[in-house]
Amino acid sequence: MRKFGSLLIGAALPAAACSDGAAGLAVAHPNPLISRSGHAYPGSAGNLIDGNYHASGWNVGTLPASATIQLAAGPTRVLLSWDDGGTYNYQDPTTAMVYGFPADYTIETSADSTTGTDGTWKNVVTVTGNQVRTRAHSFDFTGMSWVRMTITAAPPNESSNGVQLGEIDVHDISATPTGIPDDTWFFMGDSITAFAYDRATAHQPSFAAAINTTFPSYFPAMINGGIGGEKSSDGVARLAADLALNPDYRFFLLGYGTNDAANGLVPVATFQSNMQSMIDMVQAAGRIAIIPHIPYSGDGSHDDIPSYNTAIDSLTASNGLLTGPDFYGYFNANQADFTCPPCGNSNPPRMTDNLHPNDVGLQEMNTLWATAPAITALYH
Image 1 (cartoon, rainbow, N blue to C red):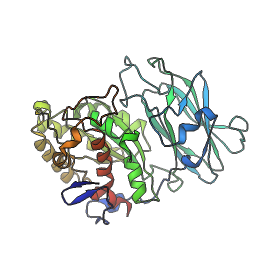
Image 2 (image 1 turned 180 degrees about the vertical axis):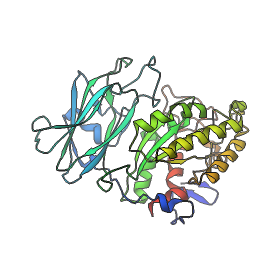
Image 3 (image 1 turned 180 degrees about the horizontal axis):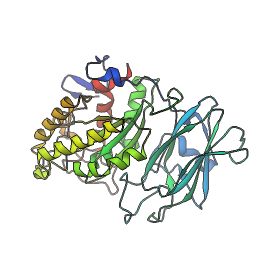
Image 4 (image 1 turned 90 degrees about the vertical axis):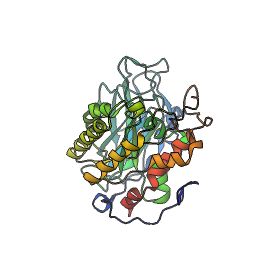
């Protein structure tokens, strides 16, 4: 456990009061993760449901190719998410090489299959031209016990490794028969976001796993939407597309500001205006925006981050947002979390830059979200 002021990071918090807006935003309907107890076919796809997001759970090989998961009967609506486990950015330019995700695929369900290949199947999702490294889909599962994902095309800019999925998660969202599930989280931001919420082994427990430990009835669905190098203006430019691609994701966590604050590149007033635009877009889409404090950096180029965090405090107050974690205060108090090693998440391993936290610090960011009083209050 790490100490942050009087708070032991990693320790369970007392129940928080709901004065931070949590009462009306409570996660009242759990969406438990049910795929870990399922069975994946063929055997070469068995690691798709093992909880390891950054090992090759399924080397797809010749297309088309299918992986099938047998689940316990009972759920009437599910949310299936897949993660390619290899590509760093949530989305790259079409000219950049990518490492694993499919371009075209379908998802089908069955009630009477016995092997994953026989029986009657119903198509519930068809995707063409996908350009992101992780995606989720909700669909009716009444009377069903099998789900099959068939990949029919790779992106034109794929690496020579072909399509490789790291993990498939299936959440039971039957408690939310229609509409957006309560417990779904999209982490949007820059390179620090892309590193921190990738659910690599070095960054476990993830936010979702930490919430599940404290509140065993719950297992949040989470998507890492980080893109290296982004500023708040880039977030504004892509947010509408991300909202459309993720219609089942309720909480949008906006981790911007580090690149804006680099040598004062983006004036504080412009940063605040950009973040307000994102808040407006999230709320207009019926979702919930939360903005954490920008992390402390000791690289000498980000000395004015406190001014940007003051703008975040103003945005949180004026928009009635839940209060996000204080990454600035935490990393200012734990500067050893910038020292490499351990920085094994990068390939090749990066050197200390006093800007990106090491693997210990990146994991702590997940824990800080999971123990923030405004977040824990949602689960009471």
